[in-house]
Image 1 (cartoon, rainbow, N blue to C red):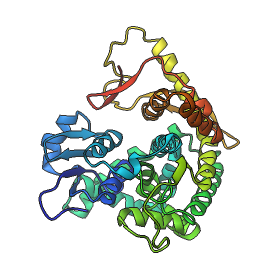
Image 2 (tube, rainbow, N blue to C red; image 1 turned 120 degrees about the horizontal axis):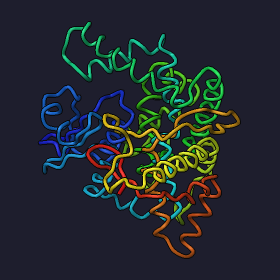
Image 3 (cartoon, helix red, strand yellow; image 1 turned 45 degrees about the horizontal axis):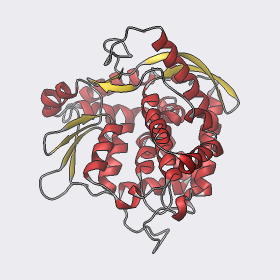
Image 4 (cartoon, helix red, strand yellow; image 1 turned 135 degrees about the vertical axis):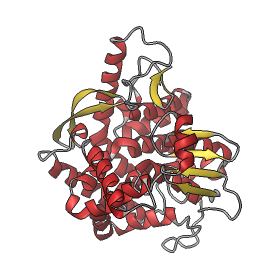
Length: 386
């Protein structure tokens, strides 16, 4: 929501953008005064894009002149500027769950998000073409908006094979997503937010796929409303920044005491990592093999070729809930996972053991044991090594 005075943040993004939804959720829930602009805005083209050296959205421009691209780095800065004492008091299990849910929000549900967007063009195409076209040029003649929107749609739909989305795997993707919605609907029957009674970074991260794609595009929106209405209500709750929700009147805005994780969230995480843990492990193996083959890569060296800001690390075959899926290993999720690895590495003694036991409980123990041959970082809008 935007404030009545000058904005504290200008968010350059688009309604159909997964990662814009992640940042927008924070701004709305925390009631930060902001305005949102399309990348067609003259300032984006003339100032913002050259400053971040990337065409990607979202980008946040702060009133003091700071400019950041990448939703995770933007949330880091927003949390630094607008700290929340409720979520700052998380125990190790809750903090680790939040880190892992950000990893999940980045790529862990990308298969249904991309499938339900691009495999149902009869239902979605007119909506998506307009959404993408307007983000690039508005106002403009309808035919120009349609031309630009189709250009973007053609490029984005071409990513499906990279994610292993093809006729042979689609039945499993749809089945697993149906199970995902059922687990989340059960969770939101007992809790207004992912960690319990208060919104957290876990909610902002999951708003990316669950709202940006699956809660707006016509085909998956109708599926969510029909089969998981409480998940849809959660998206409304976040977007509306509801202080008190009608489903949970008088519920204290707080996390569970004693570092507890709701059992319904544990069930959801087990389900997700059953189909995502191996992808992360194999992707880390591809990364380490790439680094071993590039011993002279200097600090700041990019992991992707010129013109490609997100590295594709090589082909992998993953067991996706019992179905072998051939796809590409992608690097960005590993950069976010590194933050979870760093968090666990900073714990000691019984606290560390508690966090690792939780990881084992949800099927992420092997993921938390990963080690990268070089630290990952971002430089000039691209993934690089430190």
